[in-house]
Length: 406
Image 1 (cartoon, one colour):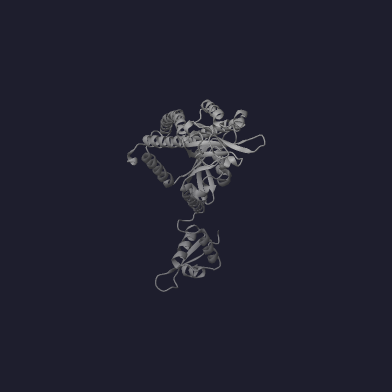
Image 2 (tube, rainbow, N blue to C red):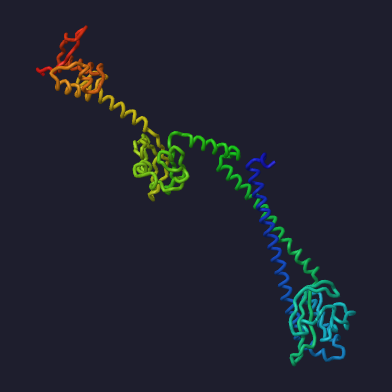
């Protein structure tokens, strides 16, 4: 199903999901902190109330009365209601209650362990008593001689604490919902911006475009090198890497000035629309560049390299052939004859009073036919003289000698 969704919907759903998860996690953490803060606030209040009761002179004096609860119960109830607590219980060192929200419980032993406050320490925690499970504080009550003579216990029911916490969650939930709504609208806006930046293309269209570009770029016979404003190579195709005799992956991200050489860097920096011949290694390249030198010395341009090595070799061969033809035309050497061999034949003929083609061929280790062609050229150009030899059997042979008039 996800593959059929448009890019816009995918981005919107993913961002909305992220917003929801982050908002939920934030709400949970904020709720935990709020509950902890609520408990800490109640703990401070309960501890202050318990210590104030334990230090009241009226409470301390009542411990010596025949009926301590007569004086302590009214005081405890006034403080309980003023402090908005569930109970305020004062008990003696034997755990006998002198006050309780339920007067029928006065005179009974406390339902929870009083050993910690009776030992002189302050207790803070959750316990279950006659009113239910409560978050409570117990402090020792000391006489004028600093002896522990009883305990003062105050607390709030866990149910009331949870109810207050739940009621306080309303603003937190509202804030979370508002944040989620704003996040969704923000996600929609971000999605719209991203879609405009990529020309509203879908993922498969982007993938096809990149694949086609890669195929086209690396299939080109012309080298392509792109350099950013900082002078670093950001794109290089296979042809360019081959011209530079480097690996394409090695060139990517390298400083252009370090790998291109002085001539190519100059073309890249200055720009060359018509093309400038540059020799790189064994390659004769024609380099073109858009050229874009920044104020800070950076380069941002594309360099195009075309290999003209084979064309250069052809031109050189043609120029060499033209030179040979011109030389031959200048010195009257027919096509197919070599000036060097002609000089050798002339020297061999000068060393003899006269000679036949067979003899000259034997002297120079060339064929009789080749020797005859060179001798005939010498004779036709006036540098040698032909003569018929009738001493041979059958048809007369031809002998040659250097023309002494030349």
